[in-house]
Image (cartoon, rainbow, N blue to C red):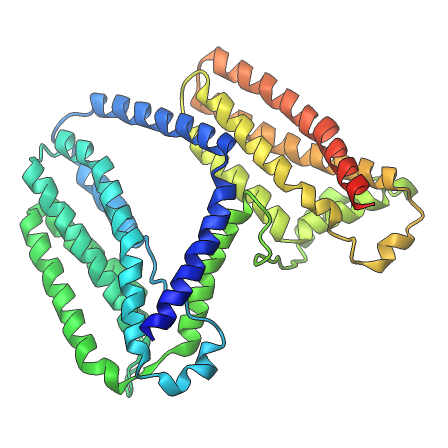
Length: 408
């Protein structure tokens, strides 16, 4: 079973490496460096304005560390067919799950250490903590994360004769209690509590796992959910076949469609607009990128960083909309429409223009609210207008025409 997990882990890492090469391209890395530099500068400026003894500082640290403790899910790499083919080996699956928990530790614990490294200056300035106290909190956080992953492993088994318990409230409650003791009490007490909790879960698991059945359906659904989240992130940058959208009626948005003229040459515009509003794959992508961009711009100040981030998110949305042009190629009825390919392209360009314009306006409004200076606001507006015009009116038609020629 351990060899089976190693094989799946190797295959999983190769797949992740393939997508990560596409995500971290030169343009994205360049923008990411500017973004991290801006965040670091803003964080440094905020720390300079803080003083010791702020009453709300422990609450901020508690919220940040509690949320961080939930990051890093139990990666089992279990597949749907396992509940049939591996059911005779159910007892041997424990070694597989233990190996999966060890593998899950790497990224999860790295996340804890990175966040605590970033939070250390805040703790030293506002709580006047020594490095020894910060080190104690680091140990408590690491042991706490180990406990939460052990709880995930324990939840993989069905406790016979007991009502099924949702372990998520237990994880959040345990995190809040241990970290609150460390922040308002002493980090040593938090370390002791975390070690006790880790030991209790380990002893319970050792005594019960051999007599319990694995929750196959729950574990398969949990792993599918985890991988879907990863694929959705990759889908922001490249086409991922594993991500499929669903259809929702969304009757409340019908008013937007009534603005489209009922004319022969607007048939494709209505089709594309209806598909964008009803589908979740492309509309969800646009909404997610727009919301993320607005949140980032709300905390970013400066002259050039808001401009770069606005241009980056408009580019990402415009680039990711291109595959939507072929959304209905597999539907035979669209090929009998009495419309030319140029009319179809014109309708798609109109839709892209409306989407990018709406996104640009929302991002620019956030820049206006977050930056009181005229320079970044004006430059962002000019760059956004020029980029929307270029992406929608120049780049999109040329890219689609070139793809059609290569296909033909």
